[in-house]
Image 1 (cartoon, helix red, strand yellow):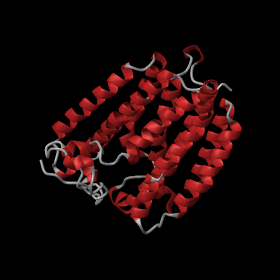
Image 2 (cartoon, helix red, strand yellow; image 1 turned 120 degrees about the horizontal axis):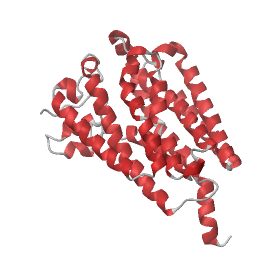
Image 3 (cartoon, helix red, strand yellow; image 1 turned 180 degrees about the horizontal axis):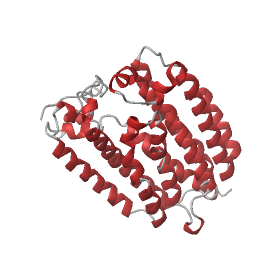
Length: 318
């Protein structure tokens, strides 16, 4: 196996120190690009925080947060592997992806399938460690995830489908700490809807890098659909996401805190991110996309403030 890296991979990363035979598998799972699993796990953690707003955090929440982290890394890797298996012919024609492990020949199709199953097994172990309601909610997403790689071939809105599956962790996180007879709360549903719109926004930004190559190979995306109005529509999705997150905070019982925090996130993080993008510079689109990890962490902090306060108040004697 040869050690080849695609154009958008980090030049220096801990995966570069792995044995030569292991490196292509790490690249197949995008371990050298942590932004993917970060954006996948953040809705899970948000789901826990929103569900705990009126009560404070409990000891088991840390266990579930750790399980979601492991699951996000494993299933993001599995998703990337599955996507590369289906897209190997398209990836060979796109400059940014032609050196990925499958089109470059660094990993055979047989070993890609074996690696996919290994990562899914880790995901299964995480699933079995979750409460019953969370298991059911997580399993519902499986066919939706399997269909995602096909969406770019049949619809101009693959980013919306990605939003549905990538944000599913908000529902699973909420279900993991929910009182099962009550099911998933309204605030968790509002959180999930906001995360879908957030995903559409940041993945549209990511797709700006590939508009020319996507047009040549027939791949559809909202970046191509919105054309020169991508900045307007991306702003709309960000604003709508902030509105839904604010509603989630209000329904959960932390309306003022979350509303103030969301206003600050919009003005201090999202607006500068959009303004930093140059249509003619794919590098600026990639940098803006990566900044969404910081945006997501800020949103998580906004939802965590109230449950942290409720957790700390008895300890402080207040």
